[in-house]
Amino acid sequence: MKFMYFFDTRLKRFTMYGKRMLHPARTGRYQEDISAIQEDDVNVWFYTKGNETIAIDSGHLDFKEARSRAKSIGIDTRKIKHVLLTHCDVDHCGGVDRNAKINLFPNADLYIGKGEEIYFDGAFCRMIKAGIPLMLPVRLKDYKTVNDGEILHFGDIKVEVIEVPGHTAGHVCYIIDDKILFSGDCLAVNMRGGYSLFDFFTQNPTLNKKSLEKLKAKVENSSVKVVCTGHSGIWDFTDKIFAHIDQSAKSTIGHPFDPTAPKSIRNPK
Image (tube, rainbow, N blue to C red):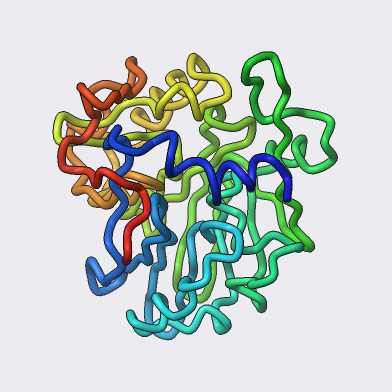
């Protein structure tokens, strides 16, 4: 198993225990058109309109309960035709990795930001820790790239692509039907508002903050009403969402980012 998958599936829960950094939404339906499954510390989101359901991100590699959790909220992941990937980190693309034993969306077209391709040939590392370059192991069998400002249509569903590099080189957000922002991992949100995601996980924190300024300018005068994040759950869109984007989120056992977040990222549902 590649190191970043090993860290994600075996080690991360120990290094993050008690820090209360991440607080994903529980598995369930949150509005008529928005639903999610929780895979420990991350969410896989779904948007439904009429007879069409699309997914945003795919969760961890071989997460055993993913399909049954989706079924519990009325979604058959094998019928999903389109999966919008915000970025190619192992906890967001693991579910559709070409080497996965359990492909969560076996019949779906995959979409990912053009800038993420630099990771796929192993020529560009995801991050450097203790002087060691760490490579992203995710490989997608077939995928389509998307670019900033591109508009996609799936049936009656409209999707706008917003490039927000920083967390990863080609991270993108999606605005769906002009009302829901799926922000991936550029934002961490707590009761005080939104911050740039934790530096430890972010490739270029300075660039991420600059991208959040761009995203704020795009969204603040729009008709967006709801923000669905990768690790901080679902929030009504208010001025607080971008209140602290000049700062990086921080969390320690004594000073947790979100005191309401679970102590362990290993949650039952």
